[in-house]
Image (cartoon, rainbow, N blue to C red; front, side):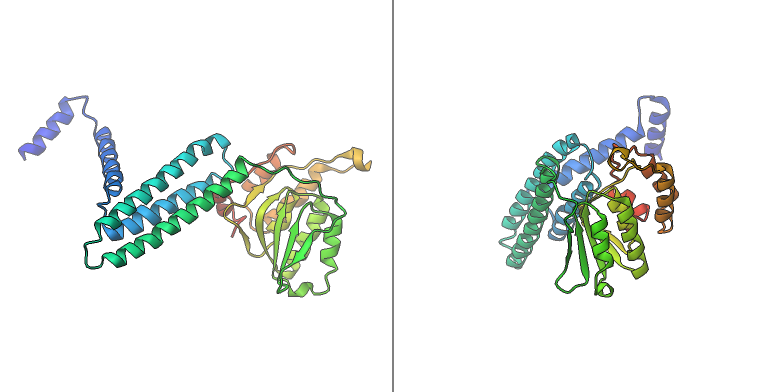
Length: 305
């Protein structure tokens, strides 16, 4: 009772006493202890594998996925952090394995730790290399003749791959496939193209109940094709880009109501369960810009399902 009374008196009479700051200090000290314990190889075997290796790796992986479209400056900070975290994991694991040599089950633990740390090294390296090439070593987009029909089939005939610019020739080739009924999925990697061709793809994909998947990029008109899918999935580092429409009258001499075209495609998105708030943000983005939503935004808006 006396101790609690003293604490109460200290909080009431001492304006400098800050419970929140003391809690933050406690969390800081716990974090330092966690880092030091692993670094010196004194972490319990199960905790080491589950928390220090796999949970830490999972958190870093999820951060990377959600920052895929972040400015390059953020990745200049995140890359060194990923490297330091990997070094911390490797050295702490090696020291833990060395300290366990004298234990009866030491060999088993060493093998398990070796497998676990190799999995961490491989997945971390893959994420870093993939993101490095995407952000800091971009390849220029090659010129692709619109007349080229960039369609390909998987060996079993169940998957159709669409790459390059979306063109009417692509759509016509897709429509005229003799064995289109054997398809199960359309995989996309395109920076956009002809919106009228994209709508044709959309209609056929919906009619046949096909799934869609993005492997790489899916920008502009490509996203119209993608949302037609019954099941819509994407690789972890797939990049989506949305924006409003524009029309170049100089190339066709025709006059098209851009606002009417956008209204037509609002319905294409919403009838696939995409929230109107997400769709409005698409068409509020100027045609000369590109909105790259995070994977979390794509999942919560049901673009990915």
